[in-house]
Length: 460
Ligand SMILES: Cc1ncc(COP(=O)(O)O)c(C=O)c1O
Image (tube, rainbow, N blue to C red; front, side, top):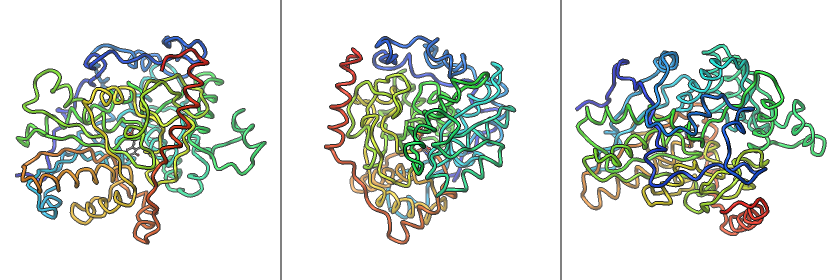
């Protein structure tokens, strides 16, 4: 038995998988908040490349991956599928645990799978500069790498407190040539207004999104880029699962359970949707459970409500039907910065509503215990986001031991944690609090949201 299963470069998928035609019901359309009506593609043109808008709404099941994108993917793809034999032994479980290792990309996570595609289509359409926001910096660094590959400029609005506390990701972005601005900044109307009232404002993802969108909408040849949640972003990530399907076949196994952490949903969708496709097309040899893992501090799928909500705090984006904690959700300062989002991708939310996908939440203390077990058995120091998936995997493997079942578990190791060592330090020094987001705050947010939707004439 091989420890890792590698695919040759020729086996790189040539098409992305679009889940839209395979959903259990049509995806509720995004709503334009100024009209209360479904969004038209032209509403998005001021900020997104046309080809990406087409992909966002496409009903084609398979979308070809351009050769120029494949050429960049080849720097690190196909990524390895690894059997966590040492973890299995440590847990004394009959379960077989496999993980897809996305930490081998240049920025160290799955994020460049979509960043490269988005940079390419923008370059093709004559865009010269992209703007984006970043919290802890994983997405910003992926887009910095990708824009450099296609000769585009990039402006990143990085949440000011992260810029100050987590300098290494900003250095990485600058190494790839990006212009990184702590947000709120004086570059935008939104930023200036906030700084006038509160010069020491530490920033938030909501403010950074507003600045990046305003910058794109007010400058020629400039577009905005988003790292999760939207259909086209999740679709670009399906290269992960398409490779994993082939690798599991080589291993002679098929997963009973597929697990991934969820911020906006892109890495989990990337791994799980190609397996879901085999299930809905009747090609899967067995029933598969799909388990989305999130923090108890930001439990959108486990405790949120399925309704229309804005994608950002500043209410600039269209309304999306999704599980949400409310767009005015203020996340506790957990280390898994990439999971501090109030909603979950609309396609993933729909699958959860139909009971096809499950969700589970853990606090960051139990999550870091799992990450330490993983580092001390398999060797890889995982990102704090990924550590959530690892905790769920260990729980499933322990359950399999108790029931004596030889379950096959597959999870997405979405990124390494070598630039997140401050989080490991806090855990090792016993300084991590176990946050739980209070139910009454969710209720309050939902009451405010219901009022807003009534005013906009949008049916929840
Ligand atoms: C390593 C890693 N995993 C997971 C996520 C969560 O995002 P998503 O749910 O879109 O995969 C992030 C986001 O920044 C991340 O950096």
